[in-house]
Image (cartoon, rainbow, N blue to C red; front, side, top):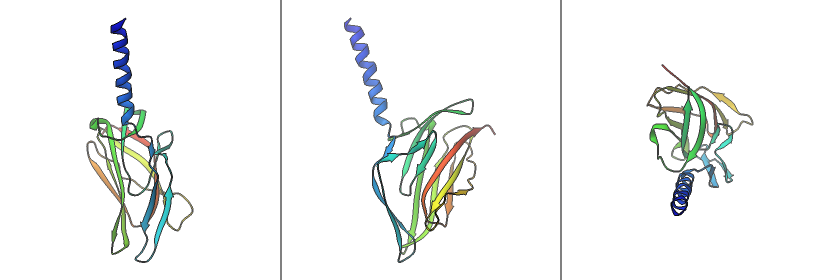
Length: 169
């Protein structure tokens, strides 16, 4: 009986440890983006999930996100945001930022690292300053084990990334 209790406590502690690395929601923050040398865009971003729906990721400038992905036969089994990079071989790293020079937006840059041995693709839509609609944007497929850099001149408030796919070369 004592061994069963010890094993049960051990299994519970492993589950708690793994769950502690999950980070499903972003902390609230104030998003402030330079538009030109005199104007900026500002919005309060509440505590909210990174995945707004099944495998549909929303990312704001200044966020860096680690996404652990389980794939089976080129299909997603699970995707979850995590605090620490514990399994680099199955974790996509995404960094979205604004480059500013002299108080003016120079560009927006999205960096995506593909840890898999397969080509990774996804769709992207952006919500930009001055427009009231999501706009589709093209994304270059990411070759295995490489990092892509996507750049835009528009001031992007948020990106929606979805339709994730992996294919062999």
